[in-house]
Length: 131
Image 1 (spheres, rainbow, N blue to C red):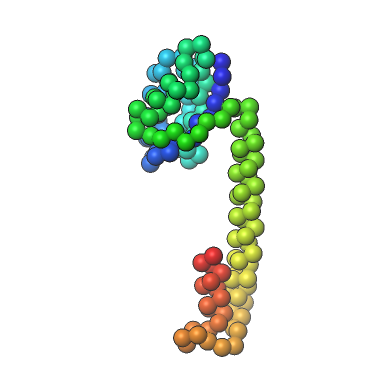
Image 2: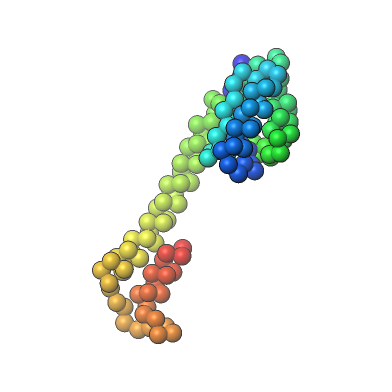
């Protein structure tokens, strides 16, 4: 038995995930399948003697979805660790721009000057929140 995680592209709702799960579970040699719409991935446990990745990918493609990548269940943590690092980086960058915008707006700090009759502090808030 082997466990893999397959990234799937093209799901639009939880019903899509349910349809893929049902199709996979009917596949020959597939022991269990769980498709997560939010994560856009399927976790499949299968018997290597009865089926393989090509067959599993084909079942997903036959349902109208695109297979992005697969990874061994053992090595999946490395992939998730990279995602966590990416998320942490994005949170830090967001905080760098959010905190000044928050301070300018909550304490009603006015910076002298204007552009197009709009105060500089309003322009800075707009730029910080857009980023």
